[in-house]
Length: 89
Image (cartoon, rainbow, N blue to C red; front, side, top):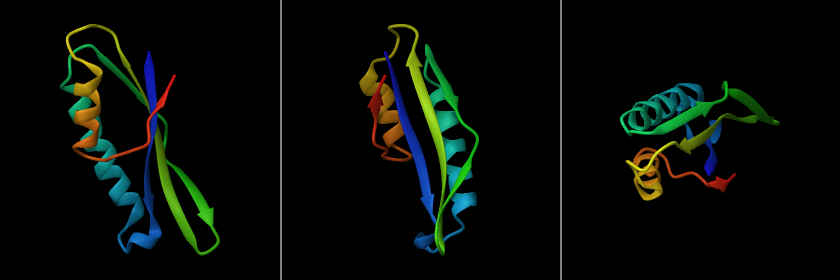
C-alpha cells in the first residue's frame, strides 16, 4: 500500500509561496527520512496559475517497506509539518 498527497502554497497567503513550499517539502523530507522502512518520492515543483493568483505544488508518494513503523506514525510525521489530503494507492 502507498499514499499520495500534495503540498500546496498559495500567493494569497501574503507570503512568498515558492520559498514556503521549499521549507515545507524540506521539513517533510527530513522527517520521513528519519522513519525506518519508508520510501518517499516527490515531484518537481510546479506552478499553477489562477489569473492574478498562483499556487506552487509538489506531489508525494510514500510507501512502507517494512513493519518497523505504522501508517499512524507516517501520518503523524507528515501532519506535524503540513496537513494534506491523503489518497490511497
